[in-house]
Figure (cartoon, rainbow, N blue to C red):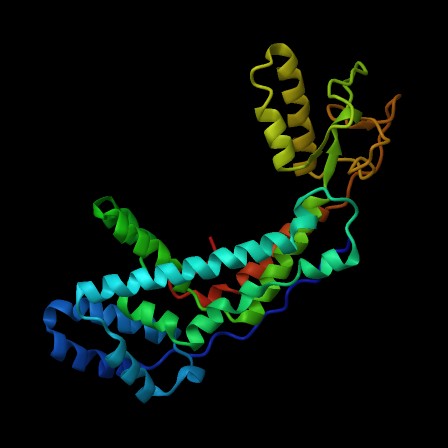
Length: 320
């Protein structure tokens, strides 16, 4: 299957509001609620400003939103967080259910994939959720009232946080970035194409042989090249010397796959014998052409797609 062309760059995100807008929003809030809340007010207003685009409204609308949306009491914030948490749990839960159903023929061995299965796996109903949360200003409300914590803050202060504070910190990760829906879809497409490649990457274990010609795995055993091989290796720890032989053969298979040395004819082929240790195929041995660098082409495609989100993540400079 051909790998998608490299994802083209996109324009940088619109400039955030000027510093004067932040000061205009902060000053009356501090005057109203006191210096004790000044740090929290400034941080919340700044978080909103970093992600506020021209399409969200002008400076006056920004100042008015901050004035109306700031919650001064712990009780109000606790109530608002509980509602947000409850709502997002419903949204994310149902979207996960839909995603699982759309990808069922990809993740389960239900027979040959049909063209309609490949089309449905590209249907991503979640791509516009974050965009809609910002357009409805729900995300801005959360950013105004709850901090987006950095890794450094978590390392320094996290040991003193209670369960609720950690829940708020993790919850706010979803609003730390504002990536356009069109870009989310493009990233998702690159991820799904890579996922499909792995889903179709099976090793017929009963066709593996040692240098002596032994075939230790039972007939009909076919494993996907990632979690299938991993789980099979883990399941052999209590089988003594026999299990060790199989584990070492699995290790050799995984190394051939990772180094892209696996023969092209071996992938999901129930007919060809293969010795992973020598990388020879057939009952009498013989070298054949390896698989092209397809695995790394997909890795590169995903990397390039994810890099496009970097300009839209003010809380972190890179995806990592």
